[in-house]
Image (tube, rainbow, N blue to C red; front, side, top):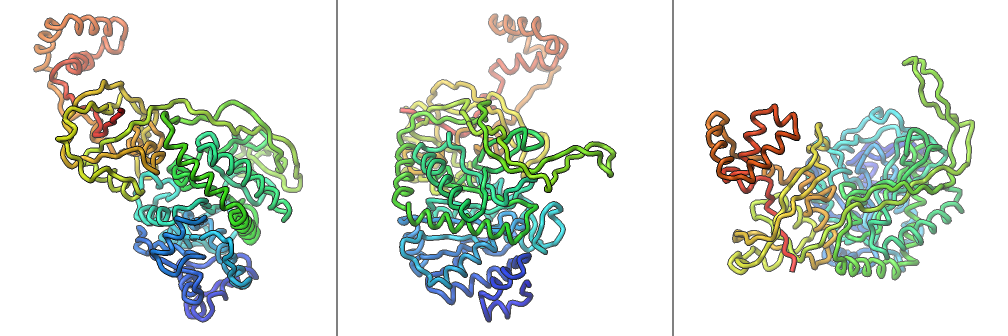
Amino acid sequence: MRLHTLFLILCSSLSFLSNAQLDGNTTPTYLELIEIYSQLAADHDEIELYSMGESDYGLPIYVCVLNGAQDSTKTFEKARNSTTLMINNGIHPGEPDGINACLIWIEDWIKAGKNTKDMPVIGIIPSYNAGGMINRSSSSRANQEGPDEYGFRGNAQNLDLNRDFIKMDSKNMFAFAKIFHALDPDAFIDTHVSNGADYQYTLTYIASVKERMAPTMAEITHNEFVPYMTGNLARQDIDMISYVNLAEDVPEKGMSIFNDLPRYSMGYAALFNTMSFTIETHMLKAFNDRTQATLSFLKCTIVWMSENSDDLERARGDAFEYDQNLAKFPFNYQLTEQKDSILFKGFEHTFPISEVTGLKRLKYHRDQPFEKYIPFYQTYAPKNDLEIPDYYVIGRQCTDVIERLKANGVEFENGPFDASKYRDVEFEQYKMKSFKSSTRPYEGHFLHSKMEIDAVDPVKVMIKNGDLLVPTNQRNRRFIVSVLEPEMPDSYFAWNFFDSYVQQKEYFSSYVFEDKAVELLAADPELKKSFEAKKAADKDFRENAYAQLYFIYQHSEFYEPTHNLLPLFRIVR
C-alpha cells in the first residue's frame, strides 16, 4: 500500500518499492518520490541527486545519476565522455509507469551488488512535471486502468510539456535542457502510457523517423537496437510493436510511423544525434503489468548499451561528422503512400448501436483475439531542402531566441557582432511570403505552418553592433538549422517568436491616397499594366476599392520596406 508519511520513507528508502510491487496499483506522490531519491543518494555513493533548476510550479527539477563520479562537475564530465542513458519520467504524471519502473530497477541493482562494470552512466529525471504530479487525483484519466491515484497532464501553466521542447515556454524545459546537455546522452527514453485503440500488446515504442536521421544512427537504431529489443523481450513473453498510430479508425485499416517532430522530447533529443525512444504502455492493461513491461524495456536497454557502447559511440560520432558535411538540409517530411505490412495482435471489433447516443459505436471484443498482417506505412520522404549557410546573424533584440539558443549550447562567434567588419559582406535576409496560422491556440501559441519565403537577392545590409553571429560549423548544426530556418515545421518563426515583423506598422487613408494613386499609375506604366491585368482577371479584386488602392500602395515607395523582413540573415560563402 502507498506510504502516507515522510517519516516512514526516511526510515527505509526501499519500503515503498516493496509495497509497490506487492500491491501493484500505487505510485508515490511528488514529495514521497523526491524523499526516496534523496535517501537513496544519502545511502549509496553510486547514486547522486542534483537539483538542476526550477519548475513552473516552483519545485526543483532533479536528475538522479547512477555510476557517476560523486562530484557534480566530474559526474557530468564523465557522462559526456562515456556511454550515457537518460530516462525521463512523469512528463505526463498520469502516466507513472516509468516512475515506478525506475525505482524498482534501482532496488534490484542495489540488491544485486551495484555492479558498475561496463554499465553506462544513467541519468534519471524522477518526475519532470512537478506541478502536474502535485495535482493528483483518481479520475482525470477516464480510460486508464490504474494506479489508484496519479498526477495531471498539464503543468503549472497548463502546458503539455511534451510539446514544449523547442518553444521552451516553461521553466521546466530550461531545466531539462541543462540536464540534457550536461549529460549529452547517447540514448534517451521518455516513458508514457498510450491512449487509443485496443489490442493485445502491453508495450509499444516510438523510434525516430529513420529517413530524418544520420545514416549511422538510423542503422544502429532500426537495424540493430530495435530487433535486439523485440527478440529479447519476446523471450520474456513480452510482445512489443511500433506505436499503434492509426491510419483510420481501427488497426485493421492500417497504422503508420509517428512523426517525431522536435517539439516532442524524443524529436528534440534526436536533433543532437541521440538514439531516442518514447515507450507507450497500453492504458487498458493493469498498472503493475505496464510497470513491469516498462522495467523490462529499461533493463534490456541498459544491457544492450553495456554490450554495444563502442558501436553506439562510434555511430553517434559519425553522425555528427555526417551533419558537418551536409550541404543541403532536407525537411518537411511527409508520410509516403508506400504500404508495407506488419504482423499485428489485436481484437475483433464491431459497430453496435450505442445505448447512450442511439448511433453506431466502436466496440472491441477481448474474447476474440486475432493475429494477422495489417497495412503499415513506415516510409517518410522530405518535400523540400535548403542550402545550409556558413553563418546566421540574429538581431540582438531577439532576446527570447538568443536565450533559447544559449540554453541549448549553441556557440556564437567571438562574442557580440562587430558590424564594422562586415560592411561589404552580402547577406541574405529572410522575407516571409506566406504562412498559415492556427485559428485556435495550441499550447499557448497560434502555430504557423506552410511557411514560404520570398527569394531575396543578396543585399548589403546594416548589421547592428551587438547582433550575434552563429557559425553552423559546430556540433549543434542540426538543431541550429531546425530552429532558425523559418520554413522548418518547429522553427522559432513557426512558434511565433518573430510575429511582430510580419505585422505591418504603417498604412494609408483611402480618401487621401486616391489622388496619390492616380499620380503613381501615371508615372509608372508597368505598375498600371499589372494593376489593370489584375482587375481584369480577379472579380473580387475588381469589386474591392480598398484592395485596389492597397495594391498600388504596396508597389509604391510609401510601402514600408521592412514589412515581412525577419531580423535573421544568412551568409553563404
